[in-house]
Length: 286
Length: 165
Image 1 (spheres, rainbow over the protein chains, first blue to last red):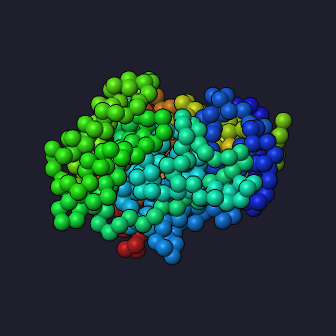
Image 2 (cartoon, helix red, strand yellow):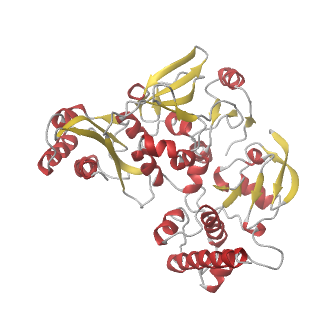
Image 3 (cartoon, one colour):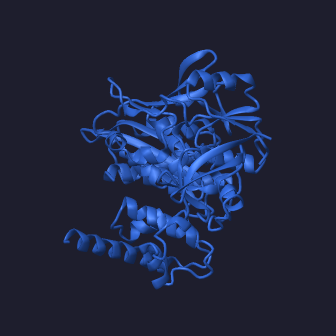
């Protein structure tokens, strides 16, 4: 790891000021679990790191007046996992966290870092994308809200501007009766980064599927919603045949990368199966 | 090279030292405090051999910056139990032969200790899940799970005896 200077501001304005010095070599540091890996492999060689651990006001975890779940960017993933508020709001998030890396990483890694990293192999972005979540970013130009489908531009690339920080995650309330599931396939070992992640949500009204939301990650360069699959599910009665067809559509047109976790063709096949299974799980109410 | 003076509680004792800003917690504990139970192996937070407890939470010493423990409480396996008396988890590991080469043992013991703090009566699945980020290349997993169950049982009995006076 290269030598750098660590700065620990206590106010957000102070952090933003230091970050605006030179966004190329001055980087924000949340829990650091991902940054440490990048620095140890010398992919990242910052001059200064701005640790956000002492910045006040980044640790909220509650529902606002409109029923949105609001999560400060310095909330640790383990706090999210163990939160009764999150479990009531969307149990699929709590369940997904159980298989995200390991306890030690979840004790340290932060929600803001998880979202800002832009690594497509993260577990929460596909779920949050399906839920229509957004992030609040603060920077030299002031605060702005970025919907998740506009945050991820490419492999490790986000629409965050130089000097901008994620300060909060905002998840809108799910319509009554909505159930969800997140499934991931790992290729190298059980606790490896996912090679494909699938989030599926829908609710039933008079036996018909309403507001289906399907998102895929890890197999793709960014997490993506699958509108064609959602359209094929909407208004239909759930059945094994319907879910198989949804899986087939999901795998058919998906643009996947070939890498050490599998070929593009293999990932499309895994997505086909996992979309079907995720939908079955939602239907079964698990 | 940026460095700073930090003060923290280490295994119950107030200590201070000078660290480089980019020094890892694992390196500091080994190089400056000779706590060789903190073993860096994978350097990716995956194997658990460098497990350290910071303010009551298990972290990977290889992915944690040393300056960040300023003002905090740090525990390693050397701080478990009391003088001349092992922690119940340590005793259970010995009684069940829950190791072969011993390289992963400090991390396994600390994580098991943490698990029992959070969940005093874990079933086999809960144990396996909590320890899934700790690797034992000798594959003594069955013995480790048995040891943790025994430690849970033991501390359970001890607590009951205590409460019954």
